[in-house]
Amino acid sequence: MKRISIKITDTFRNQMMKAYRMKLQTAMLLVLTLIIFSSCEDFLTENLKGSFSTDTFYQNDKQAIQAINGVYHAISFSSANNVIWVFGAVASDDAVKGGNPGDQAEITYIDEFTANSTNGMISNYWKFAYEAIARANNVIANVPSVPMDESLKNRIIGEAKFIRAYSYFNLVNIFGKVPLKLLPQITPETINVPLSEVAAIYLQIEKDLTEAAAVLPVSYTSADIGRVTKGAALAMSGKASLYQQKWTAAITFFQQVEDLGIYSLLPDYADNFKLAFENSSESIFEIQQLTEQNPFTGNAMNQWFAPPTEGGYYFNAPTQSLVDAFEKSATGEVDPRLDASVGRDGQPWLNDDLFSAGWSPTGYLTKKHQQPLSEVSSSLKGDGDLNYIYLRFADVLLMKAEAYNETSNAEQAKANLNKVRQRARASFAGTLPDDLLADITTTDQSLLRTAIQKERRVELAQEFHRYFDLTRWGKTVAEAALGADYNYETKRYLPIPQAESDANQAINP
Image (cartoon, rainbow, N blue to C red):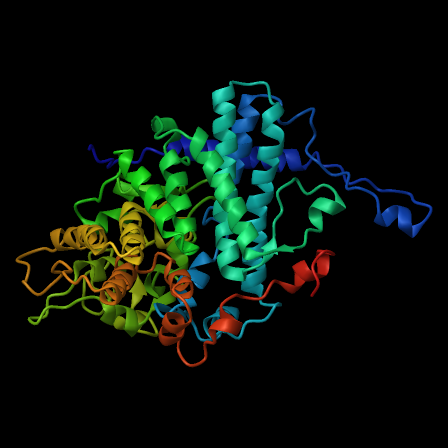
């Protein structure tokens, strides 16, 4: 399969920016009605009057595309509120807050499992996720009536349903029970929505993904590369099944992804995290970013994680525990994925210089999600254009291996697991020692389970999946990894923001 090695998403990204500017212009048309009322009861029961003007929006296919592009923008890392890395990495055993000791102290509370409902990081992410959901809901509700090509219409609605499912998947795994808002929030009934059970949220996620997979294309022409595909919806369906321990269903979805015949592992692991290989054959769902735009759409993680010498804040600092999880040979050679994932003392960094342990309070920094200064200068460090890959084919292979193991099919579990390890071996520069990254041969279910879990940690290091993996694996695994201060029953989910409990009349604080 031909590997994409040039930047091919600028057209789609520029469409996103046009949609965002349109959103700002349209917002100026929102009507804030001042009601002269004769009683408090009339005021409190009045439906909201603010809405997009139907005279100017959702009238043609161009506006429908602008609207869905605005949904994509809502999940990008251009927003400082998109701190999924805090929940996925820092809350786990893979990273600590990093940065200056007193900077962003609320992240420390999340890391230590002492955060309360007034924590700003929690509140900001909640707003971020529900903004994406609100935009998706508007598309799903309004695009069906737009006079346009039916195939394009269905695709746009499918894209919105996928992003809504993706957003709820993150919310349900961070907070547990959350309000399941599925309609435009223009009335008290659609705003004040009670908490739904976790099972009900997953049912809606599954429904959205099933409907999305039925209408989304397998691939796009260059102008639209980066949009959600059928493969992304199927892979996300498999992931949702896996998280609910629906092992057979998960295997079916992952096999359907493979059967599309368009995904494969890149020969070199490190290429997944380079600008030249964006939207490659390994990428299944990738959140697009673009630098030097007005309004801002760059990837802020580029600055969150960079060392101070490059104008960065050195947050999300990897732990010694993560570094030690990578295999080393008896003669000192190390799994090549370590130096592709983590900056460590004396090893090559991104700018043809050597990493210094003094750049980080742990001695390590995240290497993924960062770009060299030749691509983004230190003065524009927070405006990166490196995409974030949420779903990679390697992740699918490991989830498939896990599902097979849980159905007592050790041979298929090993086959999928070893494909990932074999690619890591192929990425090794030089002569490979026999004792490094050898194929897993055990057929014991418990030992194989441990091997798969360890492989997920190193293959997906600092890609923000670790905490969610630990918690879905259950009490024993989570508490062993997260330490004595972590109680699975009381700490698994973070508290719902107080601001939501105060504003949403259907939630009982």
